[in-house]
Image 1 (cartoon, rainbow, N blue to C red):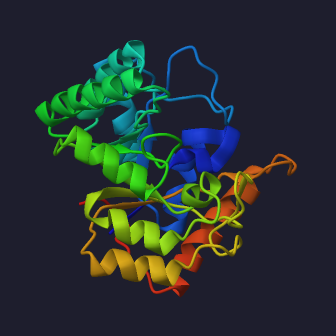
Image 2: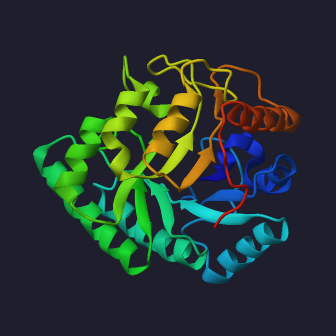
Length: 281
């Protein structure tokens, strides 16, 4: 398994801070975000790439990451609800940029349908995205988000309906609690494990809709030993991407506090017996 990080873990300091500071704690893989042009980020960071970026700009960013002693292991190309045709078009643009970045995995939304007609369109659009991803040698990993990939049952129903080898799951150990009341993390992971191609490793207090995502080991709801054992038992070898999104209502953390949380998270994984590669394969 490859230890990586999603740069929203550095809040408003974003990918620039992640690239500079992650190697200091032994993290040398990055889940590189490709944001939506003209849309302010929830975390208020300045993006390195958007769907309006050129291939040459991708090359420059990848070189910057490599020069810092890091590699890109996946791209996060979240664009919106794939029921919307405009979101699909944006996603296709981002797939071209992700291919240029040299990745074989992207993370993004799986969509949310409110009617049967929207459900049919969601399935068709995911197949179209899957076709485009496969042509580029990429697997599209759907986030643990509301709708078609909210819990294991919804994921399985959607995956079976889409029936595409390039559409898989990004399993998020924190979101499974945030979006589902009374969730059982290990049962959910067991049900969907065969479809998991990417993991967001996140801690939480386990309360439904409570934005509480501290450093790993400080939330209390995620048994990181048991999660590791499940992944190892399944032979999972993909990215384990750290995501530390903070706590709602807390004072804006300093860069030093963000780095402390990342160091604490890495230390906690090690204390739980995780044997993680510090670079991409």
